[in-house]
Image 1 (tube, rainbow, N blue to C red):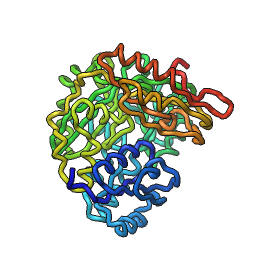
Image 2: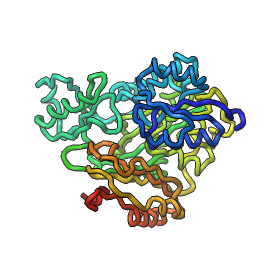
Image 3: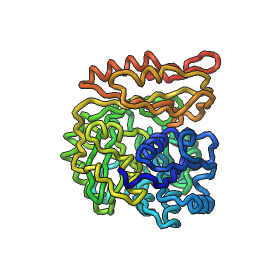
Image 4: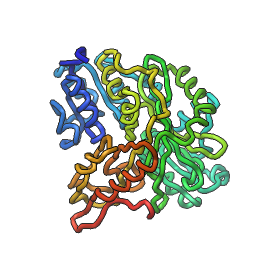
Length: 420
């Protein structure tokens, strides 16, 4: 790792999830600079240097990067920063793992589903409906349906609809979150009837491997908002079936679309007869599945990204080791909060010391406001748990839930009860 010492890395975005990137880079001897327009972003608190320049202000970023003599640019977890990183790297002559065309295919849900169909990969049933909500289109729709912005993220702007009136309002909401003014209307896949899953791929120098597969347990809120994950369990109970039926098609798709480096996640539902997808991302994602993969194989995708950003090879990352059949059971426990202002939280330090708890990402702190429901802005923390079997994992989850507290100033518990 000596080849990275003294290098200067610019990180776009200072969210709680980016703290892991700053910590990893510093461990590798890299000088870290974090920027976004939030003065108190968590990752700024631990970086070597900080700026309050918006990640969308390319001209200001170019000037700062040149002054700081940066050697590479890194971002992850948010689609919006990918385009800025791509543009900045183009201006500075620095490497970036994805082309703009690949980003458009993988951040736009309409284009992603078209891409899947091109390669014979099933997708969730979709209805044709534009912003005008034409009656001839509306009458073809079978309820319930899910309405989403085609190019938003973190479940923002998503609504479940059971009738035409709700659909019209949902279209307005989705359009307000779509930079391109595009929406997608698809069959609502009831989590009580269909099984939600995600697959995670890693690419290194064009070699593309399935790295993990999770079963996602969802919390269904009220008011037609999008369901949110509360548990991601790995390895998936459907892993063998997926590997035999769908994995070869997905690997072919990525190869022919010239994916060379990076990580990819795809989300979908298992319908008892087939796997069907609804969205994907070409980046590190909030589930931080790389934590479990590193525990299983020693391969660290975060380090792989950092090496690539600095135009260095990562000999420590051996792509042949990637294997979604983990030798342990793992759960990414997602702690969701109800709307309110966080006044007190406790238990995380004790939880971190529990056997089987690999990592905790705390994404909110006292003083933060929980506003939008039905989005990943409700996530207070992600807790990565491993055990020799599911019984042991469940025991740890129970202990974690008994220890963690998040309250408002009146002492009211803000943690979402999953049986609501």
